[in-house]
Length: 601
Image (cartoon, rainbow, N blue to C red):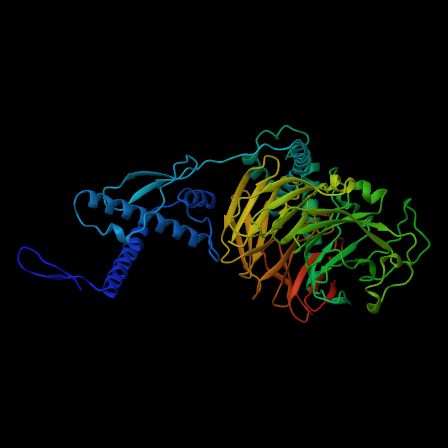
């Protein structure tokens, strides 16, 4: 081993390779500790896009395997801290001080693009560089199809909201007069509106007073009668639905832009189910379905509830996660007894099917359990595929129809939701994608449309509920409050409330006017799979909310005070879905992991 003599005749022996390696390892440990300490004082962007731009500008990977958003931001802090320490060591070395720069790998240069966060001057307290977040909202040019769709939804929503608010004002005036009496109501209403005193149709007209008071009295009596019936709900029928668990269920409903909501009595009540086998089935919801193509009653007899009416076995390559049925419009209800069903699957696609009367089918005999896999030509309805919606990069979670029946929305694990044109899909080989909307940091799961068609609510695994304005394309508001993933969202028929639920077993009611939570219901002991409000028809008037859960129960809640009305117990295991049959009987249908479909009324 060589020695290095100096002027004082002192020999300095060189360190061995093991000692040098240990010294370098010790310096790296000290550097890591310093980086961690410095990173805790550094501010980095919070938006996922800005974080990606900052990492990309420094030559770092945008995302490593297994990283979530919090880990990505921590890694960006470490990168920025390492750059600051390297810069300090470089200045010390130029100043003649020994800073051990050889042991520190030079980090990539900071980003120079104006679209990423820009470093500002270093703070005087030694806290490192402060980064300025560039909060810039970007817009993409809409296609002509999307512009036309927004115009259609705007016209539809304005008319629906006008009618809904007129009914709501009438009921509120009647409620004030009914509960406070005529004299106190006049004083109360005078404070609200002083301009109607001289109006023959105003608040102080005796005929209007009696009519509105009687309307409120009738609503209360109907609601009390309905709640009494719901408290006595029992299992009326159970049907073996598939060879694998049933994962989704939906029922037919009526929606019209002209306000004739009570046409639900003329429309056939259908139940659609989807399962893990990838097939869909149509069941009788309680009507005789004796509607011919010309509007006349055929000679074939009716069927009993939960009888199989149509089937298509393999429509998806994998499990169906969600199913939705297009609302009956006036033209469909009156002239063409057909409907449309949309399905979403984990095979990265959604599909649309037309349900039409099968004139060649054997409508007189009900199918038994052993013949579930028979050809649908023997059944009353035939299911015809009309569109295959492709575009999502990950598994699909939910699907929902817009109240107009012209558009359908899908959510996916690719952090986006999309809007599709149904009418275009019916006339072409593939679906027309109108909108691809991002904005969620986690997987998007639940979706629900406002009854006016103006808003859509989407939920994600990060506990965020986003409300989007379909007429402008902007985010209207967002809600935070769930402790875990949010799996479903449902607007109330009154248009003022939004119900959400998820992994935490809690149902939260959000007030859209105040933009805050108005109620929190500890509903179930396990995750909640689906929420459904009562229909807006005069027979139900949105007076209750139904929920299903993995705890093996379905529950019905009053929308007036959010108290429990009934518990539906009968499934052997998880309840995967729930829906409400329109009509005065207030029938409830549930599907479960036990492969059965059950009717409660």
